Picture 1: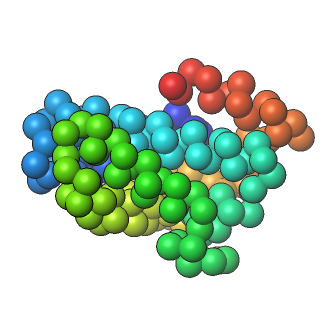
Picture 2 (picture 1 turned 180 degrees about the vertical axis):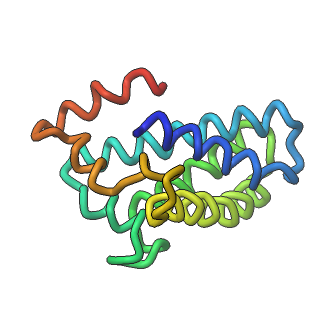
Length: 145
């Protein structure tokens, strides 16, 4: 599921960031890094016992997206990634502020969907990733980076 989540995140980021001032290659690289940062944040949070925060992010329950630590972390990392690719700090912060909610909402739609095409995006599978061993999630994610 993590690989599918990463691929969808890359796609959503590339779509959303297509109109930014960076060239296509830099935008693609930023999308790859941004998706990796999201997966890293999710696995880190899961490994630290933050399952509820992960579930809150991809459901309509719990705290508001802007108050979610994973979301806040993602937004900051996206800004840093965009700056590293050549965008000025103000533009990178604005792009991250606009892009992060769209990314999370796009992913959330897949988790909340009942369509057959979205059956792999199931919040209960996030729990299964832990498999009773919080450290095991880190081994499952190594191939994604």
